[in-house]
Image (tube, rainbow, N blue to C red; front, side, top):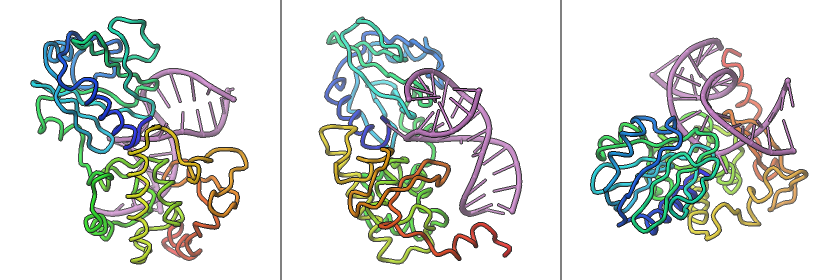
Amino acid sequence: VPELPDVEASRRWFADHAAGRRVERVVVVDASVVRNASARGLADALRGRCFREPERLGKWLLCWTDGPGLVLHFGMTGELAAAPARSRRHRWDRVIVELDDGTEIRYRDLRKLGGAWLVLGAEDATAILGRLGPDALAVRRAEFLKLLARRRGGVKAALMDQSFVAGVGNLLADEILWRARLHPRRRVETLDAEERASLFRALRAVVRVTVERDDAGEWRRSWLNYVRGVAGARCPRCRTPLERTIVAGRTTWFCPSCQPPPPAAARERRRDPSG
DNA sequence: TCGCTTGTTGATGG
DNA sequence: GCCATCAACAAGCG
């Protein structure tokens, strides 16, 4: 469940649910998801603390308290869940935070590609989050275009690069490129001014709409991802059958009609620089 | 058994 | 140094 919109939904949910509440106890069900502290260390550090307003940067959720902070990344399968205190555990509950209102916040993650970190402050968190580009929800047009001007290489790889713009993952990238009518194998340096502007508009529109939707996880019927992966899926715009390929190492869906491929010369150059 | 999966990192090679 | 590709991490599903 973990691209920017899902993490933003988690942030809002955490803000409603946990901000202002005191931590009664912490149960680390699977210590391997706590990346920079022992189970005991995490539990001891958080017990008795009060959560403040959480913060989101890209796909990271920072749960601050009046003491240290709990940093969460959801990998590919992580999510937050609420449950009555000490109720039956879910198979994939990894860390459980019991609050003073008789509820529990649970960090649930099947594949454990994400994790939990204990941080003492913002500087501490910076080291764990690594270099992040501007948040995809907040980035301004001028800044995006400036960063794009410096960028080389595949446009899809750029969108998914967290140090370029933070928060976009594989599905959002496909949606953005489809909306901007750019083939996923286009290279940034070949995009003209209009295409760059279109890319930014698509990024902003897709991220804003997905963040504001009530039904997190649902894609609009008129969007690419609504039919992504469905057998015989057709482009919602032009009804051309969608194509599936691998770009930047990830499964990629696109419309071969709306998103015309780059010129053969560009592909050849990429494949065989010497020729 | 193989291939595939909304993420990230590090090694490798051109 | 830059960029693309791939394995690894882990666990499930068809």
